[in-house]
Each structure stands twice: as structure tokens, then as C-alpha cells.
Length: 130
Image (cartoon, rainbow, N blue to C red; front, side, top):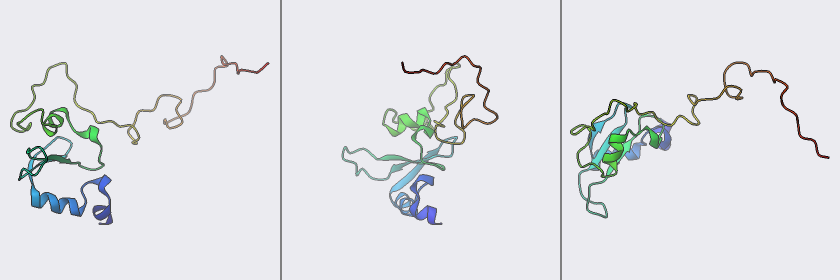
């Protein structure tokens, strides 16, 4: 419960959820569980309706998929729920940035990698000042 009151990194706080219920309308949800909202009024400085995302879990901007990113930044007028981006067959699925998480990639020999570090081969000669 305290995480919901004070912890904005693990989702929306209670105050944010109250503001969303009062001023926002749910536009859609992506495959990661992120929820996308748009304001009901035009209170923004440029007269457009404000758009925002409430992350599912840890707040990380790379979790936003490209189609929703375009909608959030007014590149597309219609949300992906109404006009999805066409997928090319060579495009890969979107992956969030995993750096700093337990799912991050660690090369062989890294102190954070699983398993035993490989033994030194003896081809290294330390520098010695003369």
C-alpha cells in the first residue's frame, strides 16, 4: 500500500490514479500492459489534448512500443487501437531496454554472468615500467 502512495516507479501513485479518473479517458492498452490516456479537455498550452502513459510495473520509457510512441508524440492522430501501424515482414518485435535489470545480457566472463568464469590462457603480459 505504501508503494502505491509514495512509489511512482512501480506504477501510478494514488494521487495520479485520482487525477486520471477525474481528467483522463482510457484510449487503449498495449501488449506489455501499459495503459494510454488522453485528457478530456484542451488544457494544454498548445490547445491539444494531453496524452500520457501509465506503465505496467517499473516506469521505463523503452517499454512503450513504436506505434504508441508515435501516438503519444502526436505523430499519429489515431491511436493504434483504431489505425495500427502496418508491420513489414523484416521487422522484429519490440523489446524494452533490459539494461540494469536481472534480465540484462551479461557476456561470458562477466562477474554478473551465471556459471564459472573461464580460466586465464596465459597470453596476457602485464605492463611493467622501466
